[in-house]
Length: 395
Ligand code: NDP
Image (cartoon, rainbow, N blue to C red; front, side):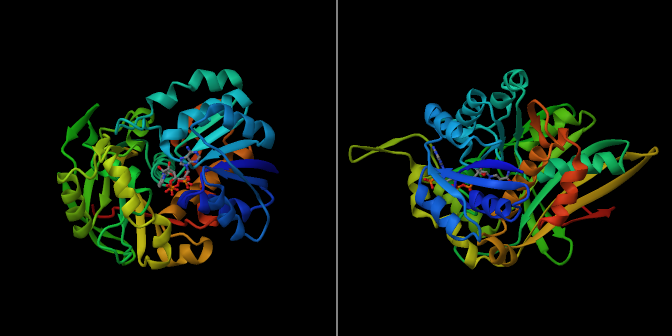
């Protein structure tokens, strides 16, 4: 039985808190802290057990250390924004507590995300005897574990990996982002990078697309190749991969709006002077767009996220597709959040559980695929994200 400090009370923070609260035998005490404590209290009011809430500025290391020292958690679950990863890791080191997050560090002033900053903490966490588990959401997160599971159980050697993230949900707005608009737009407008024959190859954003038919009647969608952070760790940890790509579905309306917003400069991250005030266009855009948390009750349809892996077993080539399908309305009924925050928050809870139960606990900074996938995959089936394997699925 353990005590966790969850930092961040947005869409994902809400789901993690709900899911941890459902398991009092593992998460005996929960403290939810964020910049706006009212949001923590709102989430707390939805639960059928009591949790503590607190206010914290996660950009401020001394403030974080004071909170951690007061709360004395066994683990800090960081579901604030990627900008806070390093300050929270620093605070965990100073206070002597294990760390976990769902997205890799991204500097506020450069639209660039990579693991180098967090991997640089390897020795510090090892020497302190502490663990940092990186990227325990769905993608990254479940997709890393899916890849490890497929490699472990279906192949002698894996050669290609295609991660396919389809959102077949509809919220009825012409343009809205399913999670934090700033993070989402920075990710989608970034140049595409995929792994091919030992190096990352760069192509323009959204320049490669294909059609993909999801199983179980989820539908046929246009999927676009883009860069996604798990590719960086997966090609490092599975050096036999000759090609690794990430694909995401986008509707015509979303892409049309994004193109226009980009063309007029509304997705920029450099401050502009407006009537004597410095305004960052993408932050102003975020202010105008629907709050992702408000999409929950409106979103209908299903998501389908999985990995297609090819390789060899006993000298013979084969293909394996492992995926999860999630229904937006079912997620909302359970935790008052749609199937974007839900499939992120459940693996975050399971990653935390793996650490607290000692199944994954080891000093150092780790990506998900470096851990034994089996207990995590068992828990995915139990706690709301059941998965299926199909061999020779057409892609
Ligand atoms: P939201 O924007 O909905 O929530 C972010 C929360 O963090 C808000 O409560 C916000 O506070 C809080 N926060 C921001 N800055 C600070 C700060 N300086 N100090 C304290 N709290 C702060 O984001 P999401 O819930 O959608 O995403 C949370 C994380 O999950 C992000 O890192 C995102 O990249 C990641 N993610 C990962 C996915 C995966 O599959 N791996 C998928 C989706 C998201 P306030 O309310 O005051 O703004």
